[in-house]
Length: 425
Image 1: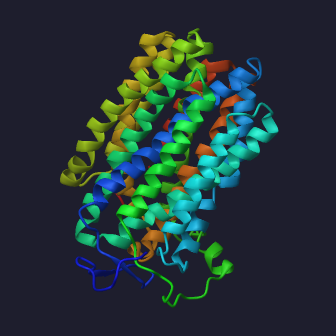
Image 2 (image 1 turned 180 degrees about the horizontal axis):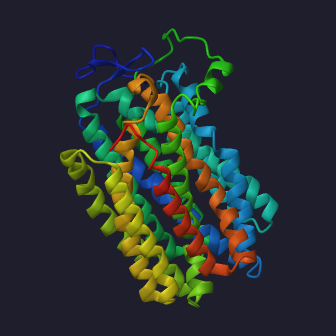
Image 3 (image 1 turned 45 degrees about the vertical axis):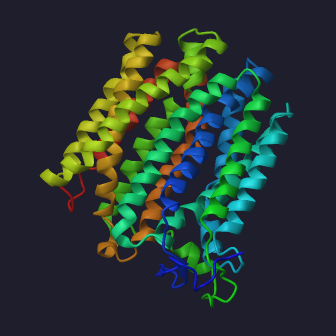
């Protein structure tokens, strides 16, 4: 049941859609951290460890191609589910509020999909169920993302964003560590992550009740207007277009290697699968430490010196050095160095690039939420394409050494794409 309008602390905050939500209480901030932690632990644990193990168990010889098929097809299907569900949740009428029904449905269907997934051995069926799971978790993530602007006043959104960032970064790292520990039984691994997402989502909704939206008068939803919002004219807004291109190339370069880290350990380094499942967690922890270090200071320093592009250039150079280390040291030491260096560069890049993105928005940021959503597509599309592109490089263009070289080239091109931007120094 939604809280009464007269309940203590139920002071209303007006969100961007014009409807009312209760201002965040003390439980919401830690709840957000835990929710994002579990969601990203599932994303990375499933994709980086459990699914590659699943593919290797089914067909060792064709595991790279099969992994690319499953992840690419499912990612393309799920790519726009998050903004679509987010837009629909903006207009949802229910006693639980606008967000909770979608979050609960996404968590439930995602968990059920993972239970089914553990029993499948056919690539076609795995692809279908993986896509359903991914769409479901995106349906959870979209409304969860809206909690911050819904429930936090502007003066507290920086703190809320920090809580979300800590949760996602820690979850992405420790999810890989946990998945490596339980990868010997992929079915149990799927159950652990699916169950974790469902339990935490239910707890989140119960502990942070929203107001009923049954009586809210929403504006009509029009698909034409919704789809038109995804277009920004690159000729009228060249800085925005170059920033989009740079982000696209950088994320592609990063995920070409990140997505295949388990197979790099087994096929390039020559490590047994069981040992690789453990060591992939070690690599993630090394990257986590250096990413956290650089992201904690980079944004503050760039604010102080009022420079963005210089820090992004530096980050790109560091990333390139890290990606080329395994070519000279094709062993676990080289991989550890790569992840340590790459993690520092990634944190430096993301802290300053995010600030840069906010400074190239059309119209001075008048439609910031929509425009940042478009820039987020430059993150989602290369993630979706990276498994297929990486598989093509590995299979037909020189194996894993070529993969490292192409990834480094993408990072370099991303830095070059920033040069024409004139509105940011």
